[in-house]
Length: 151
Image 1 (spheres, rainbow, N blue to C red):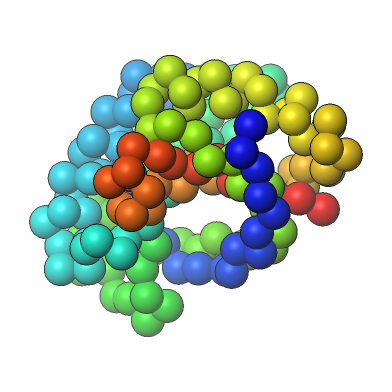
Image 2: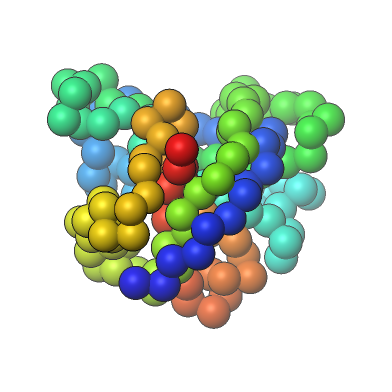
């Protein structure tokens, strides 16, 4: 797998949240969120969208799992819509896995990243969420990234 270590800075986000079992509802939320983002003046070719599974379904009942579709925004951004909430992402060291931007590749990567971390002797920081990162630059070249927080 293509893996790099990156220091991702803390950032401000706007997000929509879905609560319930992970799966098709996450994809539907992301589609709704992308339509909202595309209708705003802050969305452009330099934008970064994040998908964040906030809970580990091994420890949280599926009906309580939270998934956020996010857009990185300027620090001083003022939310002018009831459709989204304002939040932040804690920065730090991340293992960044670049993968093809397909549902199959993302699903396959989720099944392999933890073994890859172990093989590389990298330690997951469970206090921060794993980020699916979709920069418009990479998406236009049919790639995306899974960013795994490290100790």
